[in-house]
Structures are given as C-alpha cells and as structure tokens.
Image (tube, each protein chain N blue to C red):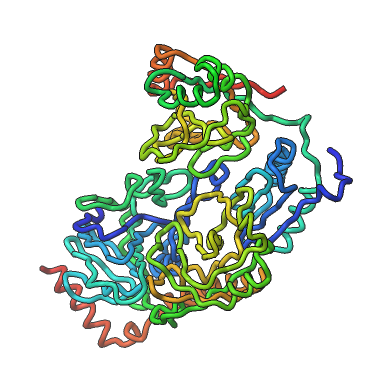
Length: 343
Length: 248
C-alpha cells in the first residue's frame, strides 16, 4: 500500500535528479527544479541521494496514506497539515494509515517536495523515475498526478534512528521571502554574440519574473540586451543546452530549466550556477532577479560548500536530541506509544 | 589517426556553467565537420572518463555534462582538448544506414501534391527524389529521436505550413524548408507531410528506445499500402527489424 491522491494540485509530478545519458537522442533530462529542497527532503529520511519524490507547484496535493510511512516536506511553505493539524516542514513526520496530508496554501516560494521513507513504487525508466510529460514516460504513467491515482510503496521502511532529531532549522538559503534575489552566473558559452554593452546590461539590469515560468523555463522582463550583430541577432547553429543556461531571443532572457529541450538555436549569454537554480525555482511571477558573474572555479566551490553543508545537516539529524536525553520526556513518549498499541 | 596540423581546425572549449563544457568546431553545417563530432563522441566514450554524465552532440559542437564533485573543470577541459586534437577517423567509421520504409500515398501523404506542384514535378518524381539518397543524421534533438537530416535535394525544398497542424502522427515523414525528417511521436508541427513510416523510430519500451544515432544515415524506401499494413502489424508484434547496412 502507499498513497492515494484525493486532489492532485496544479502540477504534481514524481521526480528525481533526472534522466541523464539519453540527451544525445533528444530525451530531455526532466528531474526536480529545486535540487536543494529535494536533497534535504531525502536526507531527512536517510533516503538514497537520488530517491524519487513528489514535486508540486503553486498548490499542494491532498494525499491519503493507505499505509504507514515517514515523510519529509521541504521547499516553499505551503503550510502542510495532517488531519487538519499543522505539521512542521523540514522534519521527519510519521504518517499513520488513514492520515490525510493537505496544504493550507502557498505562503512562500512556489514549489514543494514530499519525500517518503518507504520509496514510491514507480518504474525506473532509462535510469530514472522522473516524469517527462512531453514524452509521456517516467513517474506515474508518464503524466502529472490525477485524482484517484494510487501509488504503492516499494518497501516497508517505517523506522528511522534518532527520529526526534530529524528536524532542521535552516537559514533561508532560497531567500524565499525576498522580492529580489541575485543569481550567480558563469558567462558564456556564447557571450560574444552580445555587444559589450549588452553583457553589461545583463549584469546590471533588474529583471522581473513573468508568468511564463514553468518547468521548461523562466522568461524574464527587463532592459533589452543588445546583440553584437543586429542583423543575425543571437541565432546560432543549434547546440546542446545545459540546466540553467540563459538564452536571449529578442533581447529578453529566458532561463532554461528541468524540462528544457536538449538543443536550441539561440546564443546563451550565461549559465546560472547550479547552487542558485533552486533560488530561481522558488520565485513567483513579479519577483525580481539580478545577475552577477562568477568564475567556473567559484561556482564549483559553491557546489562543494553546499555538499559540506548538507553533510553537516546529516550529522545534525543523527545526534540524540535533548528530548531523548531527558528521561521524563522519554517516559512520556513511551507511555503514549503503549496507550496507542493498547487501543 | 593523424594529429591535426591546421590551426583553424583547433576546437574551442568553453565552460557552460559549472557542470558542462562546450567543444566547438568550425561554424558551419557540413558532413565533414559533423563527422568530427561523431568521432569525438566515440573517442570520449572509449576513454570512459569518470565524471562525464551525458553528451549532446549537435551539428558542429558537443556539449559534455559532468559531475564537478568527481572531475574538476580544469581537468575535464584538459582531457577533452587532448581528445579533440585527433582527426575524425573516417576509415574506422561504424556509421550505419537505416532503411526506413515509407508509404507515400493517400492519407499518409496529405501534402505531397502541394510539394510536387510547387516543385513543378510529378508525385512519382518527388518520391524518387526523396527516396533516392541517404541522409546523414547530423543530430537528434527537439524531441526524442527527432533526426536533423542533411542533404535534401533542392528541387523539393518546401517552406513550412503557414499554420502548423495541431497534431502530427508519429511516423509522419515531412519536409520543413531545406530539411526532411520523421516525427518520432505525436506532436504539433508545421512540416509538409509526404509520407508515413510504419516503423517506430522511438519506442520507450524497447531496450534501445531510439533506432539510430547522430552520425548514422537514413534511407527512405517506398512501400505501398499493403506493405505498410504488413510491416505495421509486425511492428506491433515487435518482430519487425529495419534493414541496416554498414557504411562502406
């Protein structure tokens, strides 16, 4: 048994880090938009790094649990509730059979993640469980979740050591409440298709997230970025596109994201640093974005720092918590368990 | 294998963010330059460089995705620039020619009359021209298994439809401007359709979901409706195999 979808939400899909290795054949990668929230959700449950989760956008799903498991919810604050009672995010939460998980509404950010200790049982297709809606493969039947879908678990994994320690009070890396954020970018590979002025405009301008923001990409509105050759514009002979690359068709940037096409014919002025893509993934239309350039080495260092930070989180949730060290609290909790078992 | 002596042929390597590099050759679409990409992809695969997660070959460039936790930018850059120095090894080419049966008639060819009329040719001639040569697959992109084919005869170049169709069926063979191609899955599109293949060029349930790779060739073989139905039935059963020749 597993979960039943009572209400799907706007765009709720199963994702992992994506389907790599097939881009040469035109298969997009898909995968989660906010890799940081994804990694932390799995980390809270000692799941494998690349275990599939549920990603939802702008509105959360309503899920009924048909068996016991442990979940962790990360990403934007959608005010999660179990049986109408608020629960904490960034925390391992035990779910009983019959529990209903729902969300009171999106307070901050725009994407949420639910990880499961019992692992979602959807087939591994070409090395990934990610949903690729365009191709109709991966995830649950190759599509977004719908009412009455039932997903079973792969394992009965209902015990985690240091259960009470599995909660994180994180600094707001996503700057989720801020209206304006700065994204670090590595310039290139085709910045020479833009005039010097154009590159300066890109690095100094304030750009607004438009409503054309989906899993494929994020279109920005703001000062026009001048190309070097006004006749040919920024057309190039089509080449491969990376996660976070910034195209500038008709002078306005589009940042290409998880569901991007594998190849494209517009020059890419820059590529967003991997660690900053999650910040963008949590923006709402109307938020503003600035760009600042970093070197590849600096961007690589940021990835290393993030991995170290995640390792610290891992250590933190594997320590006995104060509550456990207090014998009266332990007694209280044990008593509760016995009462429950006796019911 | 020769070391390239021509400085103009030196590949340009640049960073694409923190997890990809782009290797670029001369800025033009030609079989010779594309062959360098195909050969470089093969070379990189042979080397089994740890940390490379994916590659996207295109007309004249190759995007290599890597895991920066496994290999640093400077190191992958050095390895790739060494490999890019080798010339395309055409003699060792293992390119294949895939025979794709196409029915150029009736409901499968809604635009063939228009293509013929525009070119001042008969429908028969259009079929003869379209199926009369092998097309190099420069790259796959846009959607799974969509081949960008080079070398369409100028006489049957046909501009795209002014209003794209909402739905084009998988297997449709069309002409879009100077290019020809096969739709691997149902999709909206503006290409002029001149035939349909019963072969699944893309099948997610197959071990190799896509039949061919960049660097291979496609040869369209005209078939009639009864052959189409026969092959279609075999395709559904999973018993049909395309004829494949090795390039000589």
